[in-house]
Length: 114
Image (cartoon, rainbow, N blue to C red; front, side, top):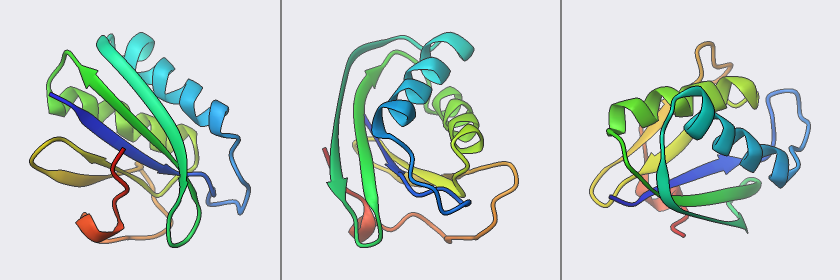
């Protein structure tokens, strides 16, 4: 199962995250904090309609629910309202514990594929 993650690099404090800091947080939360192993991980930067975005694609060896919990922790630690994730069939927004804004539901037209 391939999963793609979109992380906007603008924080709620109007600061810009360094892409490698965001990538390090992804790897740390997926592997160490939640013991999620993955066969392959790729990343790149792209510009969304609003901000520079880190796009990470990976093949995890885990359930989507466990990945969602790790993604929420990434959103909390990177001061994001939410992070978009998508497998081959479905996308969802994973919200931080206390988001400042509600971005609604996942919208495919805003998602950047790897």
